[in-house]
Image (cartoon, rainbow, N blue to C red):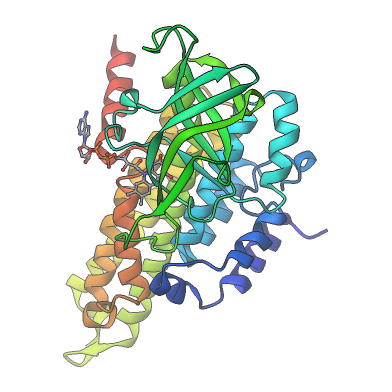
Amino acid sequence: MTDPLSFATTEVTGLIADDAEEWDRTGLLPVDLLRKLGSDGRLCAQVPVGYGGWGLNSASNGAYTAHVGGLCSSLRSVMTSQGMAAWTVERFGTAEQRSVFLPLLTGGELAAVGFSERGAGSDLAAMSTRVRREGDTVVLDGHKVWVTAAHYADLLVLFGMFEEEGDPEGQEGGAVAVVVPSATRGVGVERVPEPLGCRAAGHAHISLDEVRVPLTHVLGGTALPLPLLVTTALAYGRMSVAWGSVGILRGCLTAAARHAAAREQFGVPLGEHQLVARHLAELLVAEQTATRVCEHAARCWDEGSPDQVMATVLAKHISAGNAARGAATAVQVLASAGAADSHLVARAYRDAKLMEIIEGSNEICQLMLARHVLGSAA
Ligand code: FAD
């Protein structure tokens, strides 16, 4: 029997072919491609086989994510969102919710996950989106910004604060994650114009005006602590972005090495100039370091290690930073050959910068790591 990981990577390579540059230029991924990958569970390959997924463990899902990330960060971003939506359902949904929503996510429905708001970026405790109960329904009011894949999504997993009836200040309710079909009355989706990178990932702002969905769409109850909900959902996204960054580094390393071997200046290949060789060494170190921290984090996930959360933050922080610096190095090695917006290294340069902002910015990751160190010392 074919190994599912090698089948998936071979197939996705063929499906993307040389089209990533065109998708980046037009700012759109082909929806039929997303539906094809989605309907075969390939956008959230960690979902168990029983729910229509591929049941990949974290290490295999990471290798697959890195592969896609090396080809097209926009498609990898859509995968990250789909995987994070599925992970949130897996972790917080009841058995019935899992059996309803996961087959949709492995059956071709596309998903996005919204935490951020205009006044709540790094500080998600400042979220103003409110969810109140009315009989067998809940009503959402608020907004979300910069939601990856929202332009394509059929289902939105949205986070907000629950208001108990008679408690309009939301003092008694907890945080909630609600599955909202994007076609529901009161949902507005407006694309982010001309993002710096991952230009075809369908980033959009979402407005929610008296949006009513069944109470059964609230995942895991109405009184969850916000840090638990957010940290759990984001953990998947962090792993996915970390591996996607590894993919970016691999693409940059290959492009830089090929160019340095082929182009001659001053009568010898560029790679024989020691300062250029140093760039290549730095790129290799960046790629290898990122790979090793991601492998370590994936092992923590697969073994259920208590170090999982910190290993994930570390993997995301190192990989994203390495990708941003590595992509800049690759542009430097190619110089004018890589300076056109459409070139793989130019695209990587724009895409990689965003990896330092999303799923916990560099600074927020550093704060989490520092708190961990201080906590261990106490
Ligand atoms: P701010 O929170 O305003 O931060 C600005 C700067 O200050 C950053 O450098 C930050 O690190 C720093 N900073 C903030 N607080 C501190 C602190 N306490 N200590 C030190 N430094 C600090 N959101 C979603 O919900 N879903 C998505 O799918 C999604 N996709 C995204 C995709 C892209 C390409 C981008 C750019 C954003 C996306 N976002 C998404 C939003 C993203 O999560 C936020 O941009 C991110 O959390 C940072 O918030 P902010 O932009 O409001 O920056």
